[in-house]
Image 1 (tube, one colour):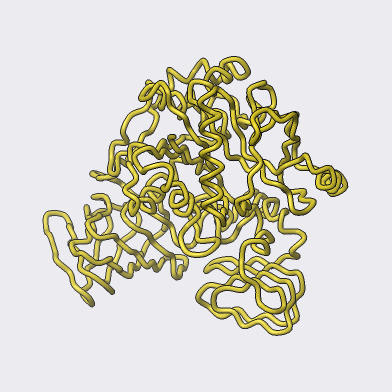
Image 2 (cartoon, helix red, strand yellow):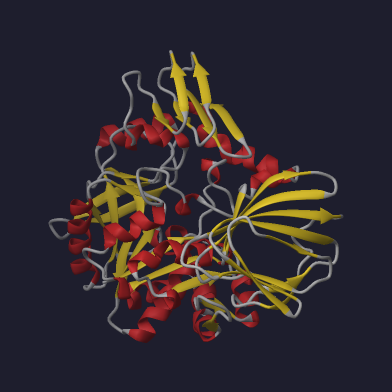
Length: 474
């Protein structure tokens, strides 16, 4: 079996920890490891690394590869999508890519941002599903509901066909509470966990029948895939492919195929699944204190009940809260009633409508070479903490509107300034005048941390002229 991980979500309901430019799947939401790392980890007993593929937004491609490097993930098994077009197109493109490599390929499709607490049961369910997929079924896993949940889609179980599997009578969108209670009582409705197993050839046949406008463009799109120009060499679409991809319909695989196909079968499976769609979902997957609170980080909580309080470095002191969500981040604080956690998405939409940068951009911005964090700013200055990973380097660049002053805090740096090269160690400083070509590189084996002070006006990340860049950025 091949594993296809879909990692293109924005995770807006987990704001302020999750942002569009550093979304939920790249965060440590539950336990150690990020969600995409945990997804790969649970698949490895069944699917070797060389058979894992991943689709994500182009903005997250390099950070995703950084996080998966410890598993030996192949960089050219990642497709960087130019825009969000839901799951039908992503799955179709992956299926076309796989069938060109292996005509008999069976592919499992897995969300990158879900929690599974019983990995052994999960693998056993996948093995059952693989056997059915080889017989040209489209297999979906259904999780027996434990409560009347309005935040999940449901699958209605039909007639039994294979002992462990049943026909699917219908897919149901997220119901209201009264309907969800009826589903729980009836016992033949299952949560749709978004895990699918099928042959690449089978899903392509069904896409051809039910979503021909997508299927008809898959061969052209695969022909437009090429290695990215910089390092690491993930797959991306050329200009023709990007334009075509972005013009195609945005459809879920459920809507495009699963709700229409007669080949769909359901395997009920219990494996401790939760899509962790909102902060309130931590109630189901996290340890609680004696008062029912889920607390992490630097938090002092007194007389609080059934609340979720997530701190980071600075102290968060809370008193007398009940059924409340409090989430801190370096640049934004969320406080909301737990029952309103589904509406955080609307809050983020409002932030973006009013052009608040906190809606999309995190305080620490990931870059191919490392990251930077804005510490302070004024009308004519900006203070940053810059971290460069070992062996990485910023582009050779200049700035029209600002000068920069760097001081090394940790590690060792090699700095190119016009025709000169400097080796800097801890406590060494250097000034980069306006309109001067320069490059910062980590010349050591440890992370390089510098403090940068920019002076000028305007101070804008777009004020960069790149002359050379190992990551293929223009």
